[in-house]
Image (cartoon, rainbow, N blue to C red; front, side):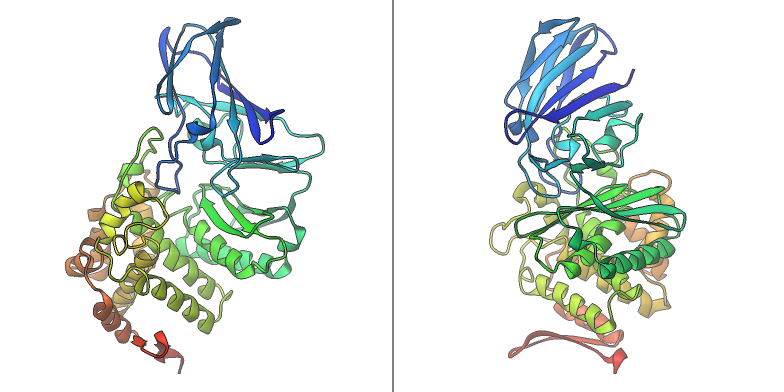
Length: 455
């Protein structure tokens, strides 16, 4: 029998009441775990802080359940077990869970317990919602726990949708909170960059994909990637969020390849019960940040001047904020687990998003200048060797493939841009100049970007 989860809004505001049912594999001690982090945010968040207490039952009788660590419990049982608990669901971002009068929004990884070592077992889920409400979730009956916690759920009185097919894949934009966000311009742009990404990579790992958007009441901007969906939170409803939404949607879609499929070895598979530091976060987020914007240009959603403005914006975010970072990009990738996503010590850490995007830009231009190839060949090779074969990669694997595409050594490049906290300004300027672009700091204007290819 599959493990069963039953969830419903509690009588207490902002709480979910949850029942977890499972049968022991063998009699004796059962170790019960709640994830301490979620894929997409490489920082321990300790979701167990939102659970006041657990109660356990077996064969109709209450049994003892003992807390042994911050997110771990133990019990002894030989027959089917039910664990009853409430979860405080009041985190209104794209990786959290929220229960209100007009919304049930759940990232299951926040709140669903599992028996340690049994993450690959089949499970079923039942979420009680008011009659007449609509819901969206990509999890299908009989899927594994790992699939369930990668599948956000949202239910509301109304969900506004646009559905289409691209290269045989079913796509949907699902909007909660305001039908006005689902404009003709937004729909056309999503269809364009979706088509471009699928054509560029050639193979899409899943048969159905949902762009899930909650238009929240307060000013907000956040997105989280999943294998079969992205969850985006944007607000308030009267905001013109078109530019943010196309950028966020394009970025999150490419994560279907670059992290959900092509994954660092340390994250293959995900270990939910502990921190999992890895030094290649700049590949995961930097390349995705760079290519997410490039796909908007390639698909015709952005004009060349709009793309260059976005490119300059990312360059400024690195050189104005983190150019003097004391840590290398590798060290900064690891220290996300230590510092979180807010400010760290002054001049300590570089952003894996923005310095990572600078590395991706420089690498792409360097490949193009050498032999006309690009990051496309790199990502296709990474997908063929690691993604489609379900193998995790290391930094050395990525460098090896880059060098194969380049046709020579890139050791100095990766040492300067990734492995050391080197000032990369002049090196980047040299690479960009060979591609017809001039990037410089002018005292009166700050950083400027000139593209001689458009003159």
